[in-house]
Length: 76
Image (spheres, one colour):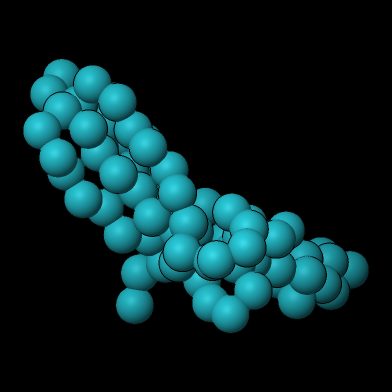
């Protein structure tokens, strides 16, 4: 399932980051955000982008450490 949800309200695009339970940033989220940015660049109908999260206490915690470790092990 996507870790980003988008909702269009007129000229405003709302992007919601959703990676429970800890709100870690992941490579998948980075790729999904990149896709959103590319689509917005080509859409003159979007006047604003709001990025929000679903975690009740924080926007994002930090990058997922397990992904950082996997990348470090892969390049050894």
